[in-house]
Length: 103
Image (cartoon, rainbow, N blue to C red; front, side, top):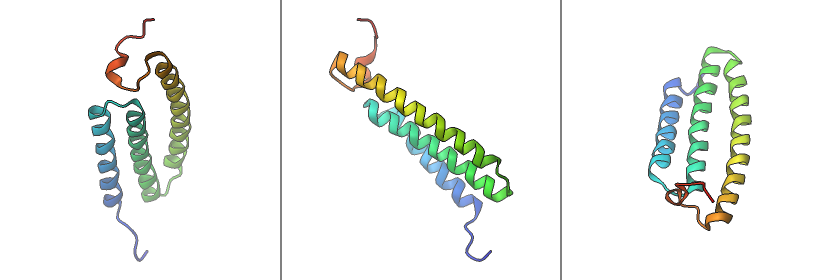
């Protein structure tokens, strides 16, 4: 097919997105930003699955992406609910302040 993007470009983009997400999780201290970086890492994995699915003409990768998206939706819902409760208790979203969950 004319103008088709090579698989290596998708994998490079996925690796860059994953590295940015991992760096954000390790460096940042705001819980909301850490959750967004985890989502970025999951989307990098999704991009890899879709790229290989397209390259191999298989729908298996697309099925995995659908399941990862479902897990990501649950993770966001539970993570934000926990964040709201922790914010009510400690009045901050800094990870360093959440060293203990005791009342």
